[in-house]
Picture: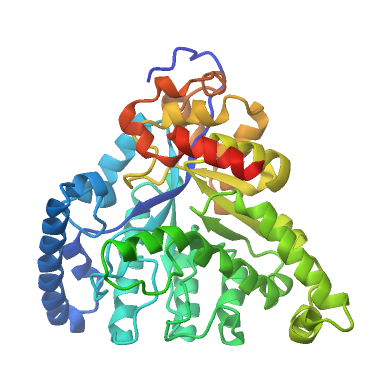
Length: 440
């Protein structure tokens, strides 16, 4: 959609949630040579698995293009790894900078897994870690093609704390300022939970390097099995909670107390849950800390004894929400209960549920009633502060490609939203009704 108000001030649009990854075979050069033969076998197996998944979607009368099959080098492949194509498409969509989460299968990952999940028990941990490091090295090259516009989030491995610390130090040297993707450790994981003391060197290394911690939806779910379609439905129903629980794992284990300068970002879980969750955490914290007789103090007193702040105070000091395709009703929650200083808008490019290629309409729908200074925080300055984007370097690009503040403040009705765009939760009128009901 054209922006005719070129004389007005432009937003500098930063997406705090996009995804990228190498094409399947392009990871090979980033692996140590000793893994190449095994990689070739794995890649052949993966290609066969991709073919089977295509057949599955064919049986569902849904094309892979409709559902955006992650890991398929033929489906959205160019959007994952073509630097030039990504820049062009995002510019046309009004976005000039982005935070990059992983999106494709790293070497040696089993086909059912995603880039956010801890490996199952049966995996060869040495090879899985080698595959994650291969992705990180590809990512460093990818970011280097447009370093002022990309904040790359790299991966670590809970099974190798010392190696993860070394990877954090390496990533800092490479300029991967997106920070650490915190892996999940659900109950069926082979690793200790995130509140384990064994991970303290990881948190300390991230803090020392000035790296934010990031936790993304899908990154902490247990194995739901392969009972399609019920297992996928269970994943969708529960995925947000499994991701959100890492917040209180880190809070109540003292990570935020020991590292007050360490930013922590939860991405693509919405915002409506935050006020109620913080109220519950505050209540538990109070009872654990000050009750003399309740079970809360017996079970939790030792944990909260060293917490100098309440959960809400920790959140307001160092936690952020990566609010992908922010719903219109959520902006009220953001302003009145979460705080506009805590919210970072994201497009979720190139996922099928993201706002691309209708981000202009999405921004008007979501931010038209928001004061421009508050919209600027959620669209620009919060992400710039957390991920160290240089706004002076981005401003000339914004003048070319980003919408004006006047344009974003111009209301748009759902009747003007293209039908195809309503597949994005942020532009679906049904989600607006649900969110209002939640707030009420």
